[in-house]
Length: 142
Image (cartoon, rainbow, N blue to C red; front, side, top):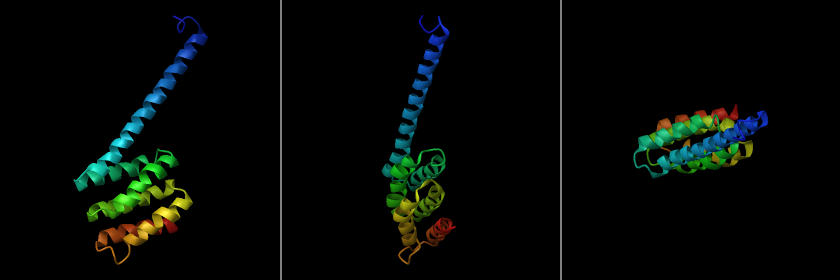
């Protein structure tokens, strides 16, 4: 075959295999990200929502800023921080605390700080939520 006969053919073949593997990895990652996001959005079980937040915190270490800011931040700041279950809210505050290092300065100011400040206000009745939100705010100041 054309791939096995020459050194250049082998290189082209390996290049195509590498490209196919990168594409497959990107598609699988996109599929997994959508699963995690859907798990949060569609689950009535708060434990599943907390699990998806933990996954978001871990995955943010290896994903691009665009994905973290575009996919994860809105989910955490808009949905999770306003969840009716306090355990999900304090998990959201903890997740925001881990996300801040992967979020640009402008988005920190516009999206994260106001949410955390709301979570530390008198409006929030759960002390654990307040404590985690305060810890996340302190991390932003440092």
